[in-house]
Image (cartoon, rainbow, N blue to C red):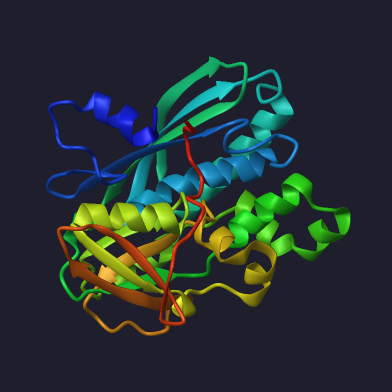
Length: 303
C-alpha cells in the first residue's frame, strides 16, 4: 500500500490529516517524527551527534512550517547493539541536549527499549498565536521557497556511490544530507508577513508541492527558471534530481506579500503563483514550455 492509503485506513471516519502538526487551541502545536536506521541513516555514515541533531531538526522544521516555536519534547529511544554502547549514548546525548538548549526546548519524558536497529522518535510541542496550515492558499498568492534545492540528494548520491575525490569535493552537499537545518530562525521575521499556507520540503518539491496544492484546493504554477537550483546541482542531478531532493527542510509557502530576496539572512525565492481550481495539481514551466518530471522523490512505501 502507498503511504497515503495506509494513513487513510487509520482515519476512516475522520478528515485526512493534511498537516505535519496538530493544532491544539488556543496556541499549541504538536508533531512527531522518527529516524530509523537503514531508512533515514546508516551508522557508517552518520555520527551519534549528527543523528541527534537531525532528529531535532526534522521535528522542529514541522513546528516552523506551522508558524510556531518549539518549547518541549518527548524522546523514545530504540537502541541496538551498536547504539546502546556508552560511547554512542554519551555522544548522542551531548549533541541532543546542546541542540535542545539552542532552541530553548525542555526534554520532559519518553521511553527507552531494545531494537534490532536503532529507532528514534521525538515528539515536539510548540507555541503559536497564528498557525499556518497547508490548506489556507488564496487565489493569486505567490509561491515562495527558502534556501536552495538539490544538495541533500547530491549528498546522498555521493555518500552512496561517490569516489573519495567526490566526497572531498562535495562536502557541503554531504553535510546538507547528514545534518540538515530547519528554518526555525526565520519564523519571527516571516510572522511579520501574511502567510496563507506553508509546509516544509521533506520528500522533494514534486511530492510536497502536490500536497500543498491538494490541501489548498488549487493549482501551483512553478517557473523553474526561478527555482534556487545551482548550476552544479543541475549538472550533477538534472532537473528531476533537484526537484525530487528530499530532507531539504526548506519552507514552501503561499503569500500575497512581496517578500525581500533575503530575510533574516536566508534567501527567499518567488517561484510561481497559486490559483484556486477544482483541478488540483502542479504545473512546471521551463522557458515557457510545460515540463513534466519523471521522478517523484522519496517514497516511504513502494509498490
